[in-house]
Length: 144
Picture 1 (cartoon, rainbow, N blue to C red):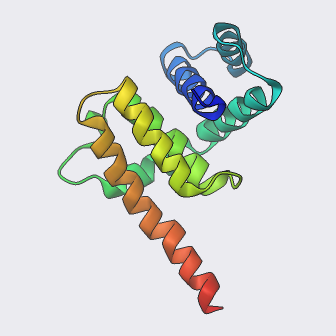
Picture 2 (picture 1 turned 135 degrees about the vertical axis):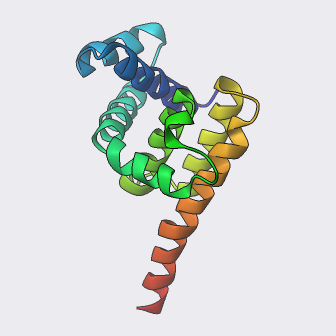
Picture 3 (picture 1 turned 45 degrees about the vertical axis):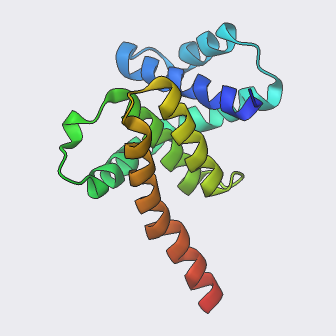
């Protein structure tokens, strides 16, 4: 498994723990680091993505809700929310990963850790956000 995928799975576990236990973020991160062996770069990525996902959770949730079709936000599975928050944060607020990579990783993680339908749900939401923010932004840059 690629080290970034392993790190993202660690972040997913940390986000889930944060919602379920309300423990201190540092304790959650220490627990994540103990469960798997991560190199320094992966630990830094985990910390960044975890902290930023929490910081941008409200913004991410608004985007998720905006692109839901015939579904209530309160009915979205918790793991799907965590995967989406993590990927949206990576796409919009962490610039060292191409958005398509963040999307692809989220879809693969949803296939492995969530329901049978989750990957297509995650793909649909992320694709809408990608088209709205990333493609629109790149078209504006080209026009300038």
